[in-house]
Image (tube, rainbow, N blue to C red; front, side):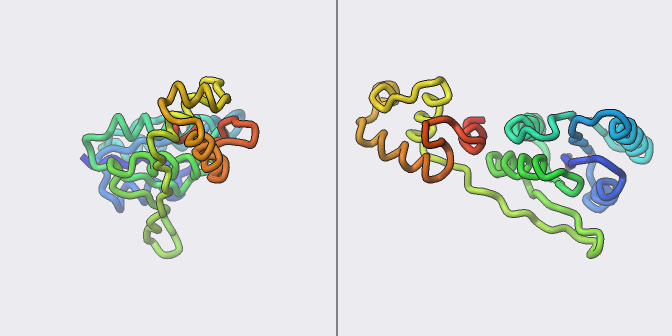
Length: 195
C-alpha cells in the first residue's frame, strides 16, 4: 500500500500530490490552529475527505512550533506505517513542521521511500535532502545521561563504562556539533537524536 504522509493546511497542493503519487492512504499532518484558522482547517480537511472518499484518509494533529514534538509525531506515523511504501510531502508546512519532518525522515531513512516538496509552477516534485543525524552509541549514551540530569564527566564515565578522558573528548565533540550547550544541556538537536 502506498501511504502519503503530508503536511496540510489548505487545498493547495496535497490534493494534486495525492493524485499524482497514486496514494492508497493519506495521512494529513496538521498543526494546532485556533479561531478562524481552525474553522478553515476543519473545512479543508472535510473537503479533502469528501473529494478523496475512495482513499483511506486519517488526520494527525501536532504542535505547530515545538520541533521535537512535531518530530515525534512524524516518527510515530512512520513507525506505524513501516510495512507500507511511505512518501512524505512537506508542501503545506510551516517552517518548524518542515524541519521536524526532515528530522524524522532522517532518523527513519530506511522506512521512507522519499520526502518531497511539490512545485506547482513546474508541476513536479523537488526531492528533499536528508540530514545526517546518526551518532555513535557512546555519544548517544552520554546524551541519555545528560538528559537524565547527569552533567558530571566522572559520573557519566562510570555509567557509560568509558574512561573519563574519552568522555571529555565526546563532550567536546557533542558541544562542537551543537548537540549540547556550553553548560551541558541538550539542544533541540540533542533532544531529537534521542527520539
